[in-house]
Image (cartoon, rainbow, N blue to C red; front, side):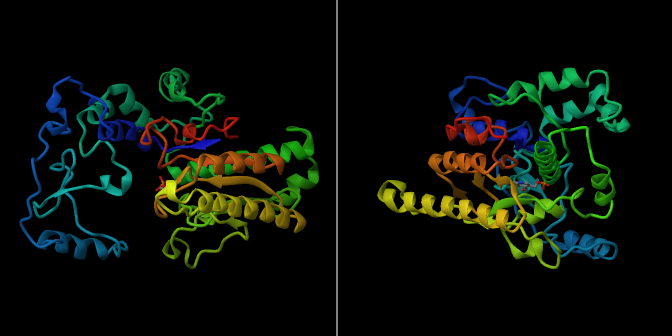
Length: 353
Ligand SMILES: Cc1ncc(COP(=O)(O)O)c(C=O)c1O
C-alpha cells in the first residue's frame, strides 16, 4: 500500500529539473538551467520593506480578529508570485527555496497548471464535486487509466483517490483494518450481529483493539489516526488524545556511510529487533500490530534515511507477524528521488501491501 497526495505528483517535474533532466517545455539549448522556470519569473529577489512589511502587519491585524494567526509569516500576493519567486503584500520579491511547505514543486502560477484548471471539463468536475464512491463521472475510469494508473508501481493494481496526505493515510489505515479483520473472520460478508452492535459503541469486537506500528521522528499528518503515528514535533500533538500504539526507532546512521558500515549495520539490527519486540509485546497485550507505517525517507521530521537492507528486513518482519506494510510516499512519491516511487530503490522482494 502506498499513499501520495495529488500535489506531490507534480513534484516529478521540479525535482527532475533540479536533477538535470530536460525541462518540461523542452528545448535542447545548453543554457536551459539559466532559463526562467516559467515566463515572467523575476530574475532576482528584491526587498523593499521590513518583513513583515506594513501591509502584511495590517492584514494580520484584520485577520487575527476572526481566525487564529500565530503561525502567519507574511501575506502573499498570489497574482504577482511567479515561478520560484513569492511576492508578498508589500511588493517584496522573495526566492522561495522551500516551494511553500514542500507543496508547490512547479512553482507559483505555472501556466500548465493554470491551463489545466480552466479547461471546461475540469472546471465542471470541481464545481460539481462528484461523490466518487457513489456517482463518479462517466469519464472517471478513463481519467484514472490515463493518469495515476500509468505510474502504478509493479505488483499494484488498484487506486483510491483522496484529497490530502493525511486523509490518504487515514483511508489506507482503514483498508488495513478491513483486510486484517476479514482474514480473522474468514468472510467479508458474514458479519456477526454482535460486531454490528458493538462498533456503534466503539467497543470490541466490532471496533477491535488493533495497533499500527510507527517510527520515532515520523510525520504522517495531523488528523486523528495520522497524528497518532506522527512523532516529529510536540507542537503537532500536544493536548490531543491519542492511541497507545507502538513506536520503534528509525535508523540514525553515521556519515559518511562508507566509514561506518559496521556501526550502521548495528543500527539496522537495533531498529529491526525493536520492531519485532514491540510486535510481540502488543500481541501479548491482546492488541495485535496489524500494520507498519513508514516513510521511505523521514522528511518533515528531519532528513533521515533507512538502508535498503532496513526496508527489506522491515517488510519481512511485518509479513512474518501478519501485519501489512504501508509506505507513506506523500513527500517522496511522484519522482523527486529519481524514481517515481522512492521505495523502488530498496529492492523489496514484494510490492508493499
Ligand atoms: C510523509 C507525509 N505524510 C503525510 C503528510 C500529510 O499531508 P497533508 O498535509 O496533505 O495532509 C505529509 C505532509 O507534509 C507528509 O510529509
